[in-house]
Image 1 (cartoon, rainbow, N blue to C red):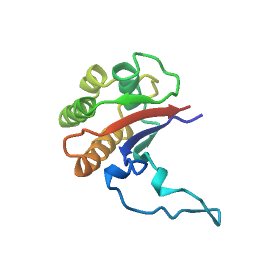
Image 2 (image 1 turned 30 degrees about the vertical axis):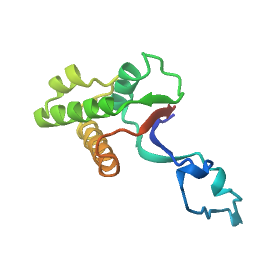
Image 3 (image 1 turned 120 degrees about the horizontal axis):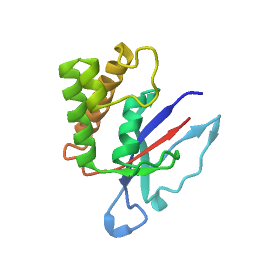
Length: 151
């Protein structure tokens, strides 16, 4: 069993209202078949902003700070300030690069032989990269984000 985690970005398009003056088209082929999507009815687009596999400490942070300690694989709203907080925490732990400090600041919930190994610190770096990419398209982190996971 593996922990998969996703951060999604929901973007309001509002093509369903003429006064929004939205133009575009959607052309998607899935399994060789064209999907019939009427652009004039598109309200939102949801895109994958980031994904992790087995980043237990990051998942534990989302459960504690976003999901009110409920670990149920549902979608949870993530605010821009929460993403900034997570970024700064990852940066802080990476700057120290010390397992004891990491255990205090961003603990692993599923212990292993050495839970604060290279893979742990790599997951923090991956998290920072995900948030940096988000900030390239949404500098003020004003978008609608959701986090979900699956075991």
